[in-house]
Length: 81
Image (cartoon, rainbow, N blue to C red; front, top):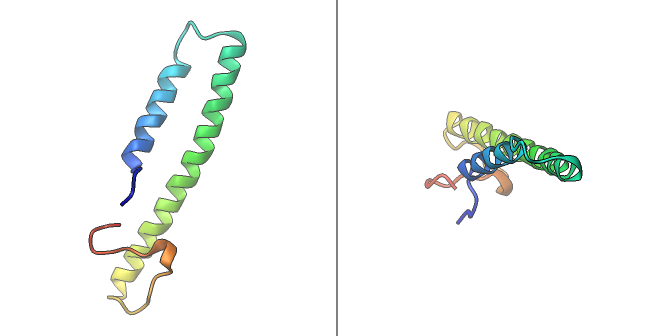
């Protein structure tokens, strides 16, 4: 069972946006938050790219009506996992 979902990622991104929008954040604290935001953005990009690849694989698998076996890392069960 997956602990994190894309909706969780969306929540994290908006939380970071709110932290960056804090007008009281200045100096080193602001620099640290900007660095954190860059790191979160980089990880988020990889998560979204991976989900996109899994979706494309699932579509291709469905289009072939099961004619090929998906690699284990991107296999999709009937419950969407």
